[in-house]
Length: 301
Image 1 (tube, rainbow, N blue to C red):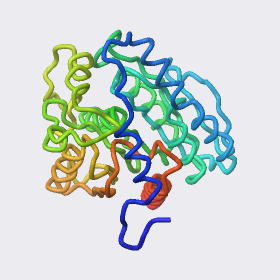
Image 2 (tube, helix red, strand yellow):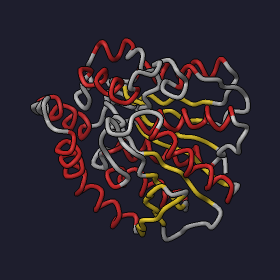
Image 3 (cartoon, helix red, strand yellow):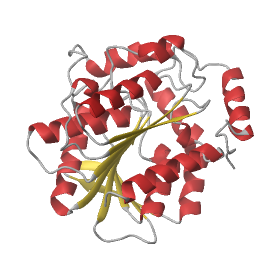
């Protein structure tokens, strides 16, 4: 339970303390080993999420892009979400995101399609965005009740995809959700320079930007969507972050850019928590945040 004063829960305090005390991963791991370790680290929580939320999983292709389809027992036929996984554009897959995506599928009665987009450095920008666009466009053509969401790098791709859809005058989702999105790869901001997040260290960020952008302008709105165009036509958007999130500054600035453009945007900052804390179902704040995200999205269907 969260306290009435919205203080950090005891479980979250212990979790953040343990994360801060944990040794950092080696700097020289080969990318394939880093991907393997990431999948292993989240495997238990991902499998438990499938059981808890009673979702069925299918591997499918959408627009020639491999995807993970997540089907809740209460699926409503027209409701579809495109959920974009995070991992710094270099690691991760739809499997690791199941603690988040399975929850949202069950809570919304929504079938979720998670594109298994190509990763950098083997496939730098715009490969990931091209894959996400291909999947989203096919889904948007087939349903009027489409949602778009993602965390971290997936939040970046969510907002970058919106920029593409808007520029091409293509159908838009009903609403968007971004969890700790990386929206400005040219400037980590004050929270990044403070480097207080035990879940993600600042020293990794510049390497990620170099590998993903591969020489492209970091202020390109498709790489850093904070530089994009927003307005009243932008789908209603919720942004979540924590007061220790490495990308807190990115999230605050993104909300301001959208609000100043008269877009409908909601920012939620959770006390004492780090990058994409919603990944960790043992935290009461994770459940509370995902519940709020689901309610926000539900209200726009």
